[in-house]
Image (cartoon, rainbow, N blue to C red; front, side, top):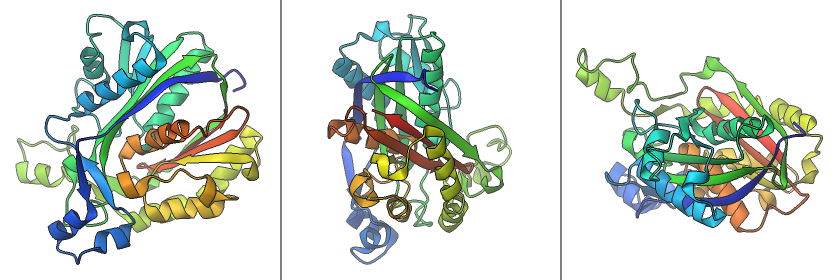
Length: 330
């Protein structure tokens, strides 16, 4: 772990053009004005058009991140896609982004990793391992998710809190940041709590098209997810901080997955000065699946909160059910 040094040379966020206010969703689902915002703690979110595909948004974010880093795209060693839901099953989103960046004939390795909402953390761990082994010097990690493509407004909780967007990070070896600990725990007994059943090989549209279409909507049992994660969170956090050798009060910035307003409040209350130190962008962007956590990281970086020597916590949960987190020394 002590060899996991890296730098963030550039980062960027790409949002769809259309911002959707919660008042619009009140009309759509037939609730009184102000109900969605008051109940779910979200004012607005962005939804992608048909032209704003995952690879298009990711490539736009990647272009901006590379420009911020001052890198040419053809100097990359690896491109890692970290989307919660890919643009299509085959090929992965990373080759599509590689092609959009003008690298389609370059041979630069490009592939996806997936841990739903924690995909960015998984990609970060993968890239840091590659840096430590001397395989790569420059990596591009992107996320892009279009949650609005699979929402079922008959189920309010699993539809109104989600938003779309993309991020990209240009990462380099031997930078100023140090990964002190990175931990994942998965509890498959909760695998049915967050589901998008269609799109893989289990359900076959030519055998049952109505069933396939019905299964193309996202399903989430919010109370079950909260219970499954919150009861395991204290032990997970203790183990993560112990591995990092950092006390909770030493965390100066907390960058969480923007799962929901209650989940963020639970996190803030669990940490010393949590309300002051936590990056909370949920009210304006909602839960952007895998894009939420790196979006919050980009915001923290833009605000100058990655100060040398200070400690940052990145933390979240995902379908699976999984918990994941990392402690960085900036």
